[in-house]
Image 1 (cartoon, rainbow, N blue to C red):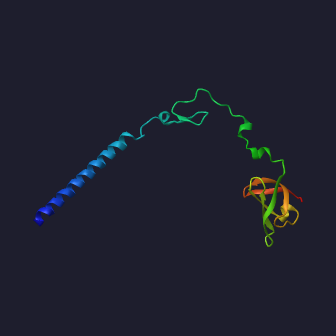
Image 2 (image 1 turned 90 degrees about the vertical axis):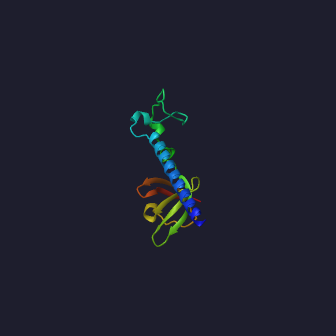
Length: 144
């Protein structure tokens, strides 16, 4: 009787193996049918309309960009002073960071850029510029 069970298990394993091969072949055929290879470039384009919906047809009217559209609000407001306070200062390195009151962004400064020695929690009025290293001050004034 043990021999019959052994052959039964072998038959079951063979059936499972055949089933896996069949499923693998079906998946391969499915991938071949849904493959994008060989399609023309125009068929693969996707267009975004003015409302942000994606479609496969090009839009009927085109939007003409103006230089004002491309400028960020921060670029337009560079001439205005921003308010913040010194959040960190390193005495040994003579540098620190100012945290903006509105945006909570940090701006780097050192004593040479500031022209004065600042201390922690001191309120300042400053102008910031963007450099390779990040935001840093260009002008600074201490206010009470």
